[in-house]
Image (tube, rainbow, N blue to C red):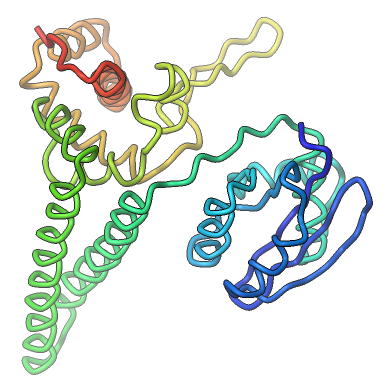
Length: 308
């Protein structure tokens, strides 16, 4: 563990700080210049801990990665549960910074490996694509209750505009993958597996950079596909998945539906579970997890594997 830990609670305007073991609070502006000036005064063995706050931590992550300063980007739910476990019920920026510092000091948090610039760009465009898809879905729901022909026409025009923008983003995302040698190599391996289409491929490359670097259990847990035991005394509850990266899991569900019909090893797995009377959702989760294990092994070895 590093000699000192600094917890950071981020907002768009400010970053609240709390340093342990000294117990020193602070606040800086959430701007590149302010972050760089603050890091200039830090020792290289200080661990920085903050929540994965989408839209607020981009500058901090980029500068920490450039300076090679160790940091841990933690799940917000994990941080909140740590706060409750330590009896902290209040929630303010200063309190959250202190809790994150205590979490970093108490737990052996893994160091976060920053995304490469190429993967970071890919993740940004994927996030924008999801926003447009959600907007299109909302507009399609609105047209059923438009009421007036003029409103319906305006909704249809908006849907067409969103369709064009999504198509343009899909082409740009494909070019980002093709233009980077490492991403292109991984893409060739992944797309050899039935069920891995362009959207699923981009999601795996942009949202799961750990693919090929972790063991099968850890990669499944990261995607939220690892079943967790629920037991107490003699009682044995059904195992359930929990947490993980929702967008990755959703993409793997889509891929698993297709792959379970076209990949013999997954088809056999599906049929065995059906014969045992397993629920369709349980089967889908199991197939998605096995598919992820296959993809993880392919990326780790750099070679396609037999799927028969």
